[in-house]
Image (cartoon, rainbow, N blue to C red; front, top):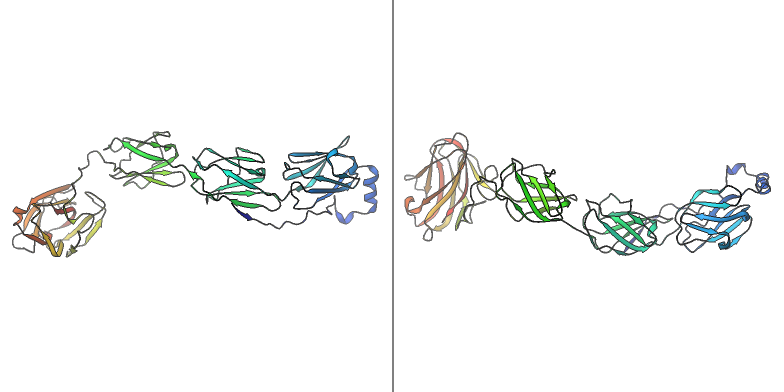
Length: 435
């Protein structure tokens, strides 16, 4: 347990604290108070006394005091260590807390101190609940826990100061909804306030996701997420959606129902807790009507990135190899802006690849506005005089599977390009390879 002393400028409680303006007091005033028999409290101390120590009360006519009330403790006349007209000594009860002191006088008004009595308190923490769910209670045991004024969870600056219950030996606190796994720090009162940090962390429960249905799901319809502790979820993140969805159709510990935004795209979904922790699904959410998954490429020319050993030999208009604007599968596609100069997106390898184990060239193409029906040339191994052609389809992904036997039966491929037939426009490419 780490203990830090927040030493404030605490001076001795003024043993010469007087009632009224000190500069106006004189012997006649003292005689008046003594002669009229009025009980008067001038001071008490010493400052920094601990429970079990002796503390003194100084004043006039204190022999008439029947009891002294401290917060949460009363010391009766028969329990006084000593009592005279100008001095009472008592032992501080272990249950006493900080606050004003009240002198009880029979047949007369109580005398209430103008100064708060406080102590130096050795607060100790013995045990703390090891794991808890946000919104539930944890129990701390120890000694002088009634002097704890606040609890900090982890590094959250918002200290909890309202407790479920608090006694000298037990403190019950509700775990904040935004709490994260971490140590607890207890802030105490007294004349020398302390900050006590636990050695062990409180493990804060997080939600888990076991699955969701339906999958594929139609945009704008409900998705049901199954798991545990889903009532801790503040929001759900969908691919393609900027804002976190925080309004639910229903929410319970084991089921969460949320409406899929109309702009959501295929991909994983992510749960976000009140503390900001993110839990990502292992399964990809498919969108109803989306194109089916393409089989993995036996040999990659481009799939999220150029294949190993294949360089960018493109020319003409701009090319982006990691475009997220139009993606057929995976994370990135290649975007080519043709400028009308018979330019090309081109892949080249000095070592190339033998075609002995492959029979087809496969690739997916998406044509932007104005490209529908345009002719695209495929040039293999720089055979410009005998290109192979296909037509661009605008506004949708089209997958082409071309037999190598129809492409001149090359024994190996070291160079492949997609060259426009002298027209301008934007075309996206994805999942290029041999199979």
